[in-house]
Amino acid sequence: MTKGPEAFRTISEASDEIGVAQHVLRFWETRFSFIRPLKRAGGRRFYRPGDIVVLSTIRRLLHDEGYTIKGVQKLHRDQGLKSLAREASEAIAQATPTAPPAEPPATAQPADRRAGLEATLTELEAAKRRLDALLQGG
Image 1 (cartoon, rainbow, N blue to C red):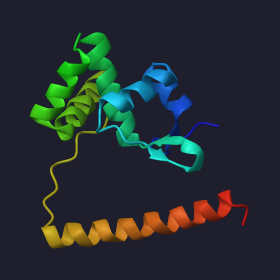
Image 2 (spheres, rainbow, N blue to C red; image 1 turned 90 degrees about the vertical axis):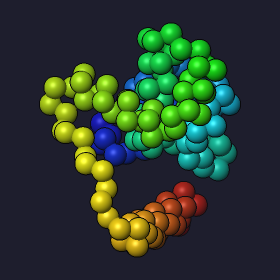
Image 3 (cartoon, one colour; image 1 turned 135 degrees about the vertical axis):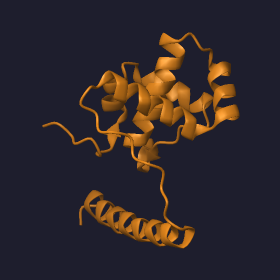
Image 4 (cartoon, rainbow, N blue to C red; image 1 turned 120 degrees about the vertical axis):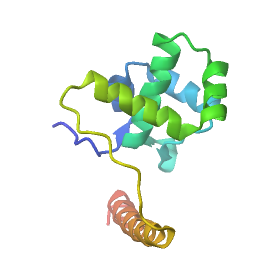
């Protein structure tokens, strides 16, 4: 069974998708403070779709474009995570001819955005409670 594009990935699934070993992902977490997968009890990692995009970008920068770890850290420090993610999204869009066009920048007012974020947070907290109940057997 294949997971949807918005599903979280385990470290083995992320490693297969990105094309690097699991220990490399763990190592990158120690070198890049912006890589923060969700961790469940026992340290099990779950990567969000956005994490996969960032990891793919790091892989490309390190393996294909010849950046060093310090070079990627400097790029992140100078340009920020959004720049890395945007660059990855553009590379994915170029590699995938049927990719949907990039979304325009959000134009919502801060209060509207906050309300939307709070609603999303409430939904995520409810989902977390349901998952915790399932994992605890009840």
